[in-house]
Image (cartoon, rainbow, N blue to C red; front, top):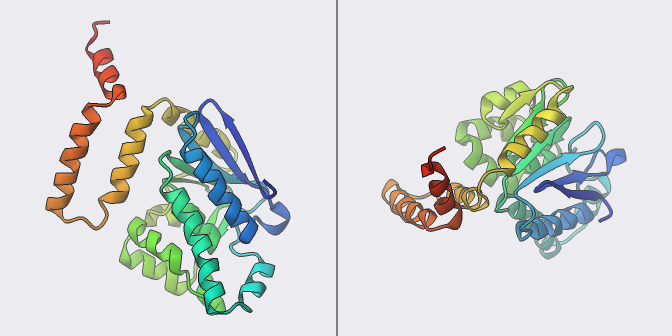
Length: 253
C-alpha cells in the first residue's frame, strides 16, 4: 500500500492513514486502498478489532485538492463511477464484521469526518480533534456520508452538521453522539490501545453478530425487529463461543 500502513498484533489490526504532508486527504488511491484493506481484514481470522488512525497532526482533511480539481472536470457517468468508489470504501468499513475504533487525534473534516462516522467507536483528542462537514461551503454536498450520519445522530443534529458547515470540538461532538470517548492528547494512544485489547478478548462471533444486528435493525418496525432479534438470540446460543462461555460460567471455581 502506498498511502496506508497496516499492522496486526494481538488480534488487533491498526490501519494508519499515512499522508501527513497532505493532511491525510482522500483521493482515488487512498479510497481504493481503504476498500482493499478492510475487505482483507473482514475475512482475516487473526483480527478481532480494528483501529483506524492517522499520522501527522490531522486525522483526515477531506478530499485532496488535486482530486477535487479532477472531479470537477468529469462528466456525469464518470462522476457516478467515482462516487461509487467512495460509497464502496465507506460501506466496507461500516459493514466490517470486526469492531472498528477511530482514533481521531486531529481535525476530521468533510470526508475525514465521514470516515470517523462510519466507525463503530470514535475516540477523540480533547485538545486537538475537531469535526465538521464543510462541503456546502464549496457548492458540494456530503451526500454519501449523510446516510450514515442520520443513522448515527438523528435528523436534527445531522441538519445542524450538514447545513451550517460548522467545525465543532471533540466535546461538542461527544454531546451530539458522534464521538464515543474524549481523552487528553497525552493519553489517547494508551486509551485506544487498552480499549482495543479489552474488546479483542471478547467472543469473535458475538462481536460479529452484534454488529450485524446493529446494522440490520435500522429501519425495522418494532414487530420485525423483535422477530429478527428472537431469531438471532436463538442462533447465538448455538455458536461454539456461547456454548463454551456458558460451560465456563457454570463450572465451579
